[in-house]
Image (tube, rainbow, N blue to C red; front, top):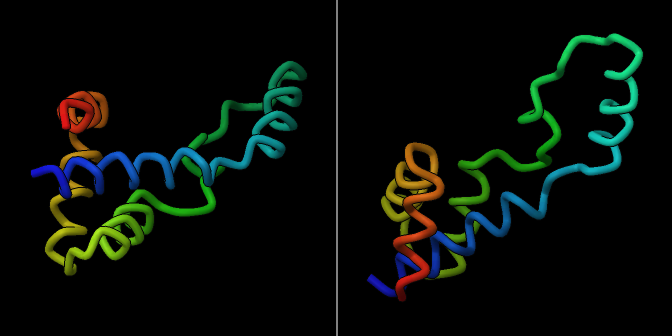
Length: 87
C-alpha cells in the first residue's frame, strides 16, 4: 500500500511539474483581448498516462501498476492524493 501511495504522489508531482506556465500566461493575457478559452490540458508537456507510467517505473511497478495509478488519479485526483497522504 505504501508503495502505491508513493507512486500516486509521484505521478501527481510529475504531472503538475510538466505544466507550461509560460505559454499559459501568454494565453491568459490573450484571453483579456477576447480570444476563446483554451483547453488547459494542452499546456501539459506530459499526459497523465505518461506521468503515471513514469512514476510506476520509478517505484518498481509493471504496466498493471500504471493502470491502477492512472485510474485512481484520473477518476478521483483529490481523493487519491488524500488517501496517499495517509502513508
